[in-house]
Image (cartoon, rainbow over all chains, first blue to last red; front, top):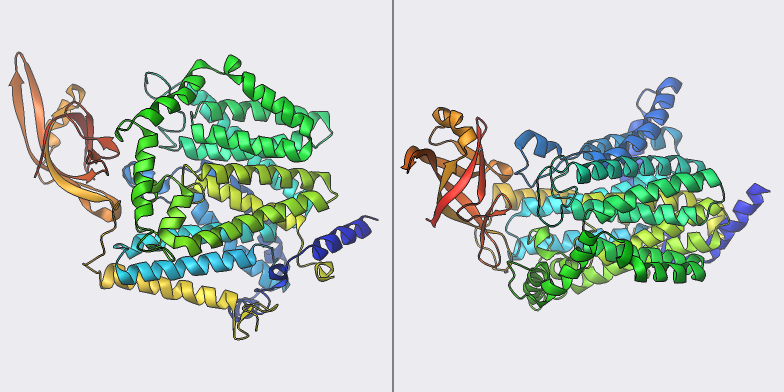
Length: 454
Length: 151
């Protein structure tokens, strides 16, 4: 019965798939074929394969934890003055990739395809092309830095495929979601502790995750917490068991307070949009209740939070860029967009300016990759939203539907945050996003199944 | 003819994934060549790039750090990104102000010039009275900026 139901779901997915999703770039790859052939010549044993399987499963969980909780390893060695960062997750990612290649080659199994293969291919290819052009025409004066930016982008795509290939069942999705919520709980507990035991005395409002172990990452972790709150809220309104609802309620409360104390206004806005979308798709009555709650929120929110939001009005009126984050953003965006006139189609190349200069992912993409890059970026976002909506609408499994809905809300929140920060480049936000996308599509969109082509 | 066929081949010739892997490999060689082996000195000016300016500053050593005074050596340097020197101790001495005696350290630093012309160092605005931290491989000291002068 279950088999029949899955077949029916897959045929539904198959019927609604676009031509780009039928393209298989993995099976005819010669490089993957050579790699697989070379690995097959290695000596193998059942014990080794068993160990590899376990290492991959446990390692991926550890990777999820380290993606959020690992401090900058170079920062620890050299003090926090360095802007070059290396996390434990970067090292684990390399190890996991090797293990996955070994496993796939030994089992002779095919690589999981997804509806994001073609958007990723075009976006990354164009990024390489535009950046190489920037080096040649001289808009990029430090090619090594541009290379590191490109590697960072590639890393997120690799995270996506790692998750897509490891998480292929609903059970695995549940297990790894548990790791994600575990990491979010530890992070929130740390944030709440920091709020009550601050590193410094600060007049006004003290932002957590700005000092100590996590240096200058209040907005980054706020983005991550927003994503996890979206997931947890989608699960709580979809799942039936009381114990699950209770546990998620406690977790949401912890994450909500940690998020509040980051005083990140862009993430408050992103959370509002994410939850509005989730409620709109799930139940319109919930949306009305939520909007009413937001309207009366100033009554019960801490004074420091409402004060922080009200500061936006005074900052918007301030024209001195030394005293207003709004003014400095508008000033920098003006400068960044002025170069679009000279380089409209392909931009100045990735890494031409420091990413912190932009404070907006969309301005960064227009300025560094031009309008073609922006179109390809929107194509990727559109494909991701479309795949998640399809998982939510066409799957009958309540759990997958709920996770897809939460992920969709989180994605929209990160897109909203992307107007005010480089959210698709920051590893604490983009890492979880790409990983979670891979997990949801891995479990919810089985393109490699024969029925997909039906 | 399709741009990419169902087997993932671009214009029926090369697999898209293979092409991407080759492009990445070529790009890495390309950026190492132009970044390290043959760095280009002339670049087109686009505004908003990070600029640095040499600045001479005097720092009053924190009272609780004065025990380290004898260990401070001129030519001590702090390294920044890619191990580039960003600060160097150029001298030290004692200054008497009223009844109190203060240790003053002279440094030459590479300050970052922000878009609005403000000088910053280590993410903090450089101005008299502001906290300043110097960290070399050997020592770490902290104090308050007394005065600063662009070199």
